[in-house]
Image (tube, rainbow, N blue to C red; front, side):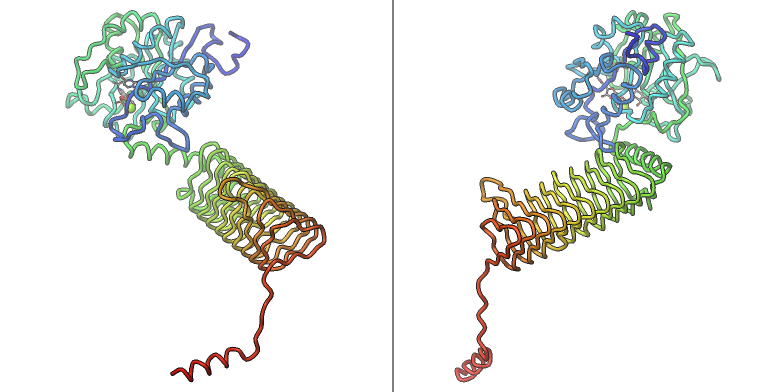
Length: 478
Ligand code: UD1
Ligand code: MG
């Protein structure tokens, strides 16, 4: 096992370590049809955050996710992570979740238990818990915190003030008046030595307010059996908070996004009014780029240096280069924008576009699977779908590529240095070769050779004095 262990302190110490993530619950308090662990913060499901943290401590092959409520949906959502799944068909509590994982964990000396609804946990903190667990040679080690508001969480009863040893965990609903003043909470994250855990696991009873088997009761049971139960307090209470209600979920999202914005600002990105921006955790932006208020940068978006992203723009899964200007209220999705390009305001760059170096996509321009060469311009009121536009080509105002016949999509190819006059329609499939001109208002249905002028519009009829004659006819009718 030791070859692939640079990230697995567990195995470094020669002990076999697994991670169990409890994710089978419905999340009743969210009042949602979506399973709790698939609710998203920072643009990613809660469970994916927990799996990502766990994957930095052990290999995905040593991670067991307990699923139950909407199991297939949860499985499908995180399948790419390469973890194992354990079924908890009926959700009879967190202790029961561990009972369901009995066969999976039996071969490991120790396990770490994480909660699928505690998503901000950092791998470093899981490491600390694991190190402390080993140093104390404990049967159970509980990660705790002292948050501003402990209400709703299980509380830690230490054996004596200042002692590492724990007497019991008491759930909110079972707290005596005296215990309610305890500020130290259970994070729902634990380390267990597997042998004593499995030996005493069946002693759990459902004799409590929820009629469930609580994993938290293992503290008292292991203590009673003479085993050592200890707790280590996390330095940062914010990272162990749970998402049990929508309000808590939204608060965790804000914490995560603030951390992302802070990370980018520390790397030299200017984000004005960062609290108004929605930036997913996986987004990367280079130094000297400026992000204005109310911008959304989503998914795996990458932005280079010295770019300016103006307000109300939403960029999702895009690669944006250096020195790019994206003006106000643009939507860019799954596309690339090369250095020095100018987009917007009010442009819609739909999936599959490549906007070349110093190209312009102006106001009320929509592009889809369009490739604009270096310096190409489509500045006003245009639709370019399934289109190729060569270098330095100018697309006039109101030009439309007619790419769809109601059944199939067809390509439009426009060469380099072409001038497409305003209000022209290009009925695909059609090719306009390099250097050609299209007269304004043309409906182009046939290919245009290089250097040609194509005009396809009705001839203008001008009747001198016609208006005066018409008015005179109207006067005589009165
Ligand atoms: C739990 C702890 C509480 C702690 C808090 C921290 C218990 C009894 N209480 O309470 O002391 O302060 O976490 O966030 O454990 N789950 C299953 N199967 C089940 C029930 C739950 O897999 O049968 C999963 C849930 O999907 C969730 C996690 O276990 O991801 C925790 O369950 P939850 O109901 O949120 O427990 P809390 O009330 O938050
Ligand atoms: Mg919870």
